[in-house]
Length: 410
Image (tube, rainbow, N blue to C red; front, side):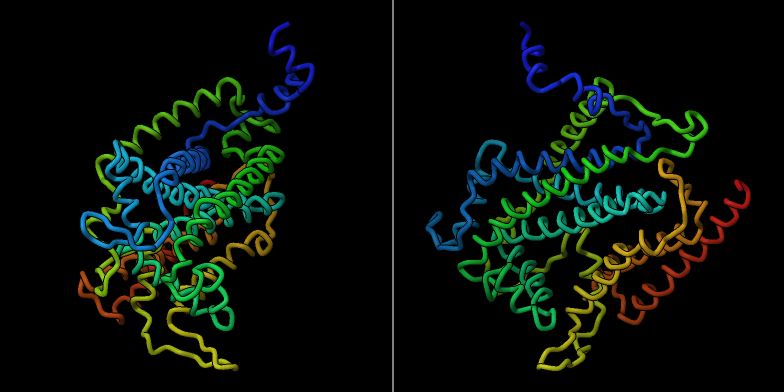
């Protein structure tokens, strides 16, 4: 009796193969963004296992080359001294960047194609949760090397979290273990970074994929003419698995070339935490928030009952991102226009949605540019004008163009 037959009698593998392994996958290149995000998560887990085996999540002082240094900082120096240790740590860093970018672009594709509408609202919400959770995990990873850069960057995040009226102090206690940095800060952030939040992320990824398999992929517009009423694509076994394997190997090649060519976060350059604050810029996915914080006057403050207040940190770091997040969450329920379940919509088919999306992208670009205001010698008034009028101009131009394109196509 063959091994397959033995397993088939017990697990009904033939039924599993017919139901899941023959599932059709679309071949359009934009659909690979979700797979790239999944590849990044796999690499993050594998490289993270290596890092956790050699990292000490502690701020206790240890002797290293005649100096008293934090144990977390020394353990990262040790990792860098191992064969390929610095490259693996760098690959972990860049894989996080690629995951954030691919999840964001994946959601952007869903947005401009209208694939968030009924009956796909739940998967849209899960996608937003995945993006938010990925960014939070990446931010927590900032703190772990415990060098001058990571401590300064984490203190900015701590200040934003603590600025939330009424519950800010409680959030600081739960996430940071109290006034950052304390002896409990690194162990607590470490546990969140390597255990609790990745487990939650894994569960959300599994649920996201399960719903996608149940509802089936949306399809490019041309599929409606080529195979109306059918799922156009290639089966998971063996074709999709082959394509994914090639893409994964390509991903690994590009990632490790990048990791070796650009070593991420050289902690010996920043040095251990000290009294001086290093000049720093956050990574690109935080830079737009940093830019907004740069141009909001610190004098902006609105008193609230009970001694609380709305500060500039809360406005730039919580309120504005929170409003954008709330709009994204409500979007499937506010956009009640009907669409065919299986087919994506063309951007020109909905000029308002496409133009608003482009306007928001320009808002992010200008807010990111504001993070470099000192380097470019820009004033707050100039940047506020740019932040208001450039996105509005982008929205108007895109709307006019989409109307003209849809007029010709329609």
